Amino acid sequence: MKNSTVDDCKIIDIRRYTDSRGYLSVVENGIDIPFDIKRIYYLYMVPEVARGAHAHKELQQLLIATSGSVDVIMDDGQEKKTFHLDRPWKGLLIPSGLWRDLENFSGGAVLMCLASEGYDEKDYIRDYQEFLNYKKQ
Ligand code: T46
Image (cartoon, rainbow, N blue to C red; front, side, top):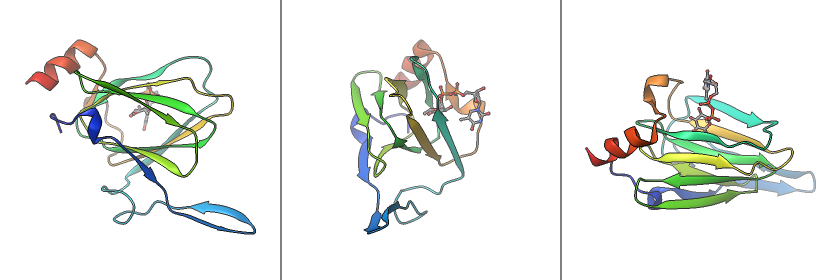
């Protein structure tokens, strides 16, 4: 979605079930998110560095800080919006066509990413000027 904007990013409440044994959260294709999950990866033991710094042409994602916290800064070339993820039942839905920076990983943070496509380096735009040109096309 070339014309996506930061306002298309959404924090969703992930379904959770609780009883005296604690919590269980679930994300299911076709029920909780608008895409089928083809890949799951997670970031952890991240030192004081920034990650991300790229956009995806097609990939949609749901990011969940299953432990700890992280800031996700979304950018559509005109506007930026920061999302603070700090609960395992909060997910950030990210449509395609947006730049993202990941910053301020807390100690012990685990960021889980549910992705709509398999890994494909050709789907990445890793140069910011190239991203701005892509959004203007
Ligand atoms: C994103 C943010 C939130 C693979 O081989 N397979 C994979 O599925 C992924 C995601 C990565 N890799 C390799 C490619 C690189 O050699 O793992 C290495 C690190 O990937 P990258 O520098 O892209 O990591 P981040 O944290 O900057 O970005 C990742 C995702 O790539 C990206 O889609 O949105 O997490």
